[in-house]
Length: 77
Image (cartoon, rainbow, N blue to C red):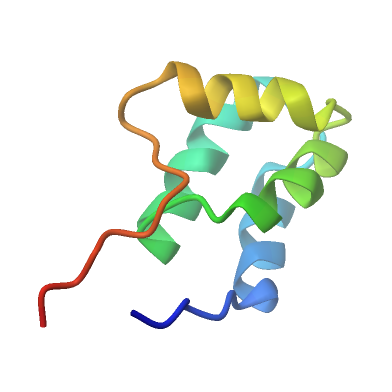
């Protein structure tokens, strides 16, 4: 299985909609997951930076909620 390349322009657009509103972390993560099919680990730092949070805080929220995934779904095709 090939790793999907992350479209950072798409990520930037999502982040800009939620920027600097700490309470918007979950909606931002939901939108990232909806767009990419999971939350790519390399998106954690830009997300944290945009919300003035530590990457560990973002990681903690992602791993706390069962609805979020840091791994790409395995394709059976």
